[in-house]
Image (cartoon, rainbow, N blue to C red; front, side, top):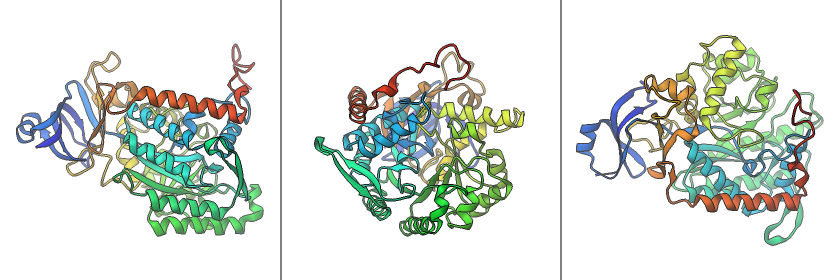
Length: 477
């Protein structure tokens, strides 16, 4: 007997044959898929305690968001209209104005948003990229991971090292106190290893840990301490290899992939490099030959200032996953939005509407995303024996009807609000657009409270104002 059966639905398997099954059923036992096939056969052979009607809906693998940031959910657009102020807000919040309650509230908020948008697995950097990772102590990662475990999504939490020089100044503000303390490279590396030991494979396997190190760009001020950076990078990379966790970097561009390979020895099949804009032919070759994975974030600011050569990388044999880079300063976790953005972004570049077909972006958001994380044997497709990370998407809506050509409807017309049900590891987290076992109002009000507290203690209220160049101009400033 199955625990859950989903009946009479269009199953977009994303398996090796990319099968699409009409009026089919899927049975789930425990956390895994146990049967897929014709409705009448599966209903007969797998009576289930819970039966979900999938009529006029598409069942597909949950989305895999391969790049985003914990903390950003409570920052969002704060200071975004003022030059450099959004970055300052992140730095202040993450170093001296956030406590464990802040990180817990943001984790819960982001997990709920992902559930509602159909993202079942997400990468979350614990802080703002490579400059303000909250790894001065392990308590912040602990708070984040506990909330992920409670809510029930699947997460890869990226902890890591800040950009030199060290020491950095952080503040512990638990229980209303304020205790500044210097943070060294060794402090952060030790904290990262402790988090890996405590949480990698935790929550029944639903939490994994990755470790990040800053991207080095030739001509930057850090060139003066290149030998020190090289030693730190190699120590960080050795940690990831010793524990078998993903190594990741945020912000590759214009020659930095070559430096990562030639100077630091960072590339490899367990490496996930984000953004990766303006790569040259040699770097594309290096990525493909080393098996390095790429996180493409088409809605990010980095994709305005440069272009990740996604079609060229794919044609070279590289694996590219899709990331939101959410949820700030101007984007959320809706992967439908990012699929659509990816298609049009690269089509505009090549002036060719055939670039990145709808099927390819569906792959990037599911099975290719799973491959970038080394999790494709467990998630990313609907196959017997895999984890039951599934979403039902409502096809019977004005913008989706007629329901012909459903794969195109999913890639080109659907949005996060069309996700009817979300299941992670066989647990129903949302059904009929209602969260199951999660007090959504409590999550939202706690996020609202913690964001207000952070703004107050950081003195950032002024950054909430509307700028002078907001209305009636073609260019802000």
